[in-house]
Image 1 (cartoon, protein in one colour):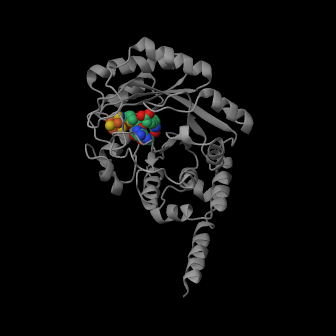
Image 2: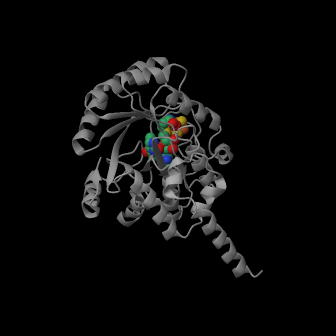
Length: 338
Ligand code: SAM
Ligand code: DTB
Ligand code: SF4
């Protein structure tokens, strides 16, 4: 067979494989193989976007985007060695270690976020996991932010037994704990804890009745198969996460991944689309790395099924797009915040 004939045959096989799955079957299934998700990635771009958008419209208002504001309540000095992270104490980065932020400052930031139009406030801490003494202060933050009428989210690293229940009792709505990448690639980026540790915390969060926010980072040098495997793992959890952040690596100077070249933006859009198809009922969040995206690229991400974003000038240590530019984009695209 000639090379061209071989390509044509592969493409036909992919189409044959990919199209018989009707949208309603997508919604019901929870057992994605890596090959199936890879086949989605390999669809012609327009077909992939069309499928993702069709599924998106069955479950969501296609013009409504959920907005969460992030605050780093404990910055830097983290014991872990995550190769992408500016907050690890193991790398010489620009981030300086800070103590846990006072409650009043956190509440003031949450109020400001609410006034600007965020519906959820997500508090992040650079820890391996919270110590018992920290827990009391975090629980107060959750209670007070909840009392403002906002949805609450925290990302505190690995939890020990009983901590998820305390967070739930304080009124926590979401816990963010990303798989970050698939099992195979994980050890090339993080060695101080394992992929199974991440799954264990996710299970504790789920068992405590807290909604799960879990996704990953792409652009870390992983293969497309690694990306597909991560999405398959998320989609195949007993219950898929309610919220799936897709982060584009923000290369942080001083970290092992600080010099990586940017990923092809279309690969990012494909990842959003594959996440949308594999997890039809989850909010898919356009997360880190948005600052460097054009308005047009963001619009493609929304078309691919992203329906959530981080809103406000800062992520944890990295910058984000100004709220004013986001507001202008919402008006230009006829989007509403939810
Ligand atoms: N320490 C906690 C943990 O690791 O779960 C919470 C904070 S951690 C910074 C939250 C998530 O932010 C990470 O799991 C990762 O997915 C994302 N993240 C951190 N640094 C990033 C970077 N430079 N680019 C993209 N995403 C990043
Ligand atoms: C998530 O998936 N992305 C957010 C949030 N969950 C905690 C964090 C992005 C961090 C980007 C790099 C920084 O600000 O340091
Ligand atoms: Fe620490 Fe979280 Fe950064 Fe890893 S990602 S170094 S656990 S703050």
